[in-house]
Length: 124
Image (cartoon, rainbow, N blue to C red; front, side, top):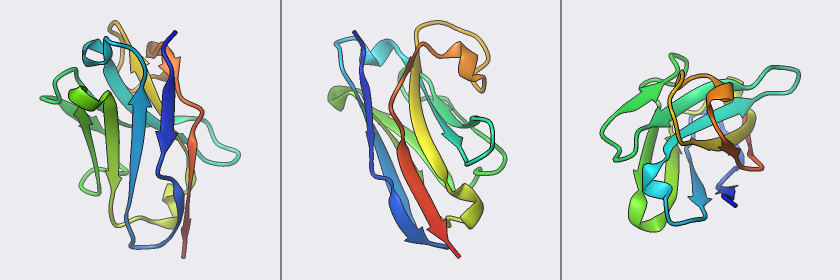
């Protein structure tokens, strides 16, 4: 059973920073393609960022490009999301996700495992 546990959310003022972490159980973390998604109240879950198995390739939603950075440490079974220059519209529950196979990196349906989410609130 693969488990994903996010942490690092909280309340921050606009312009501030947070770093989210997601620890993945199991020995095969390095084989997973990892993604971060978010869901704001009353909205659908949306893609934020993704990273391939060795961190050599990353993808970002246009809304976070230049402000957020996804990275991973395979020795620690952890994927990170560094969020800078936060805006009130970044307020959401953030989820990390893992997948074995292919499919669209920005589609939630392509991912096999999900964490429980961590809440980020950005005040204006």
